[in-house]
Image 1 (tube, one colour):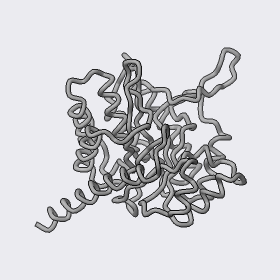
Image 2 (cartoon, one colour; image 1 turned 120 degrees about the vertical axis):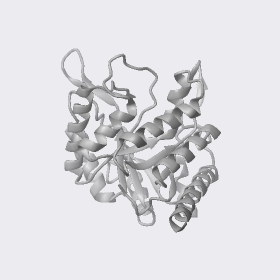
Image 3 (cartoon, rainbow, N blue to C red; image 1 turned 180 degrees about the vertical axis):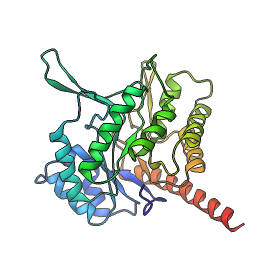
Image 4 (cartoon, rainbow, N blue to C red; image 1 turned 90 degrees about the vertical axis):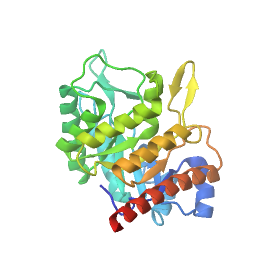
Length: 296
């Protein structure tokens, strides 16, 4: 895991904020971008990223590897990601614990353009382990795998979700990108009596079964309720229960690089920076508490 920026909070950099970010050069711990938006090394977005990378740590967060797809990885996609990693030299590279690729009726492999959930079984774990190792060998570095917000569950399972990620990190050497908002969305949609307590119990279970220092980055975001479902749409400020669960995660796993995600209904840049500042206050408070314990 990356420890050089272990106590810093950052923001996701999206196109509407390029100009303001470049002009102001705000003091933020790092920026995170969606990898696939920067695969073309010759377009304007690549030039923006190069300028940002000259002054900031950059984390690459992908949505297209589809690590849980039994039909295998897309080698072209992986090659373009490897080229981007070589150009940017990011502090972290991540993608999701999902599948998205499958053969159609004619046998051609198609991409669903979505982050589809997986069953937590031995067979699924074997697929993930092989694909994560393939990616890490190609990139010559460990990656982080993010837990999903999921709107369905599978009857078949060999692991709880924390056990699944603990095993994946242990077997493959990857880390976990812990999305606290996704955990809250799942708890709300599952009808948990006390969603924050349910999320904290998930985190406690992970802490009990995962290797030390398995968390490489934390994501925080807003969610909304639409047509009876809670949707992980990254369209608002971080909710109070998610902040509470985040503080619990820091107590369990220590200060970790933390990202404020905001992808729809983007506000002014200052709003994102304010959310990152709140995360930074919690990071600093946890670091101070641990320092005081060591000194006692």
